[in-house]
Length: 347
Image 1 (cartoon, rainbow, N blue to C red):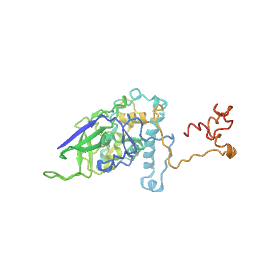
Image 2 (cartoon, rainbow, N blue to C red):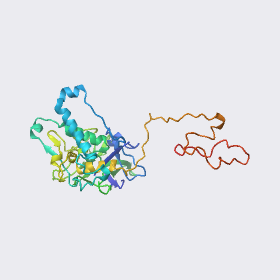
Image 3 (cartoon, helix red, strand yellow):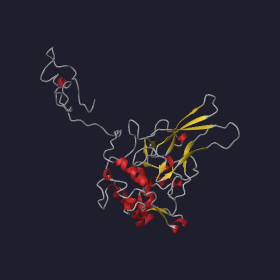
């Protein structure tokens, strides 16, 4: 007997971040981007870039194999990203001013075309693949794979059943509340695992996951650009019943096929992709960043005599000019051995 409970963990984009200790490979947390994160915790834990500029280039092997057409395809993917953050037509100034409805993303649930010649020849669109990779690298995960995630298990008192706790980590771009809707399509979940079919009490699984599925027939299922890389069984230890991506041979994302009424390069991104990137990179979304372990603190040298260094720190923003030291001395007429406070930014 298997019981499942849905935790109100956190409310149709998915953010990726550093995996928790309990987000292990046994629950199919194998994505090289990290693990899906909640956004209503005390501390935000998602990945995002804090530098505004990227530089990319092509090595000799890429140029030799794909030629100028391949290089152009990569440039077109980058144009989509650049046009989203800094629109060529000046529609808005930065994503903080982006209005999903006003600027053509509302209802933009599917932006794909199908080239049947490329489909029959099993050809992959480089522009769409690179675009999906960039959306991932900017911090968004595949919502069709990570909307529902296992966050804990426990056995009942008799040891005859396993209770599985599941968190919904997919967020609505307007309200930032959890939702089971992705680009206008509702999803549910089912347990998949690697236990062989057998009668009676079986063995425990080595790997289990909650697989998203939908019965929707609108044609907009699995359409997120953030899902592109998972089209060919990306980082997973299980076979999916439904591949969590619409991308495939002959499928390509194009702003000219947008459903929101505007047709700029940036509109190759779907509604949820745009909403997720807006959330991540809006200037009012403040998050604490830990420095890289290779980052070192460099301080200016101190020329104060060693006997006075304990009461004067040249790196302090207040210069030790506390009224408890300057201009008044202690009752004994001597400076205290330890100053009452130092640089407030260093504790």
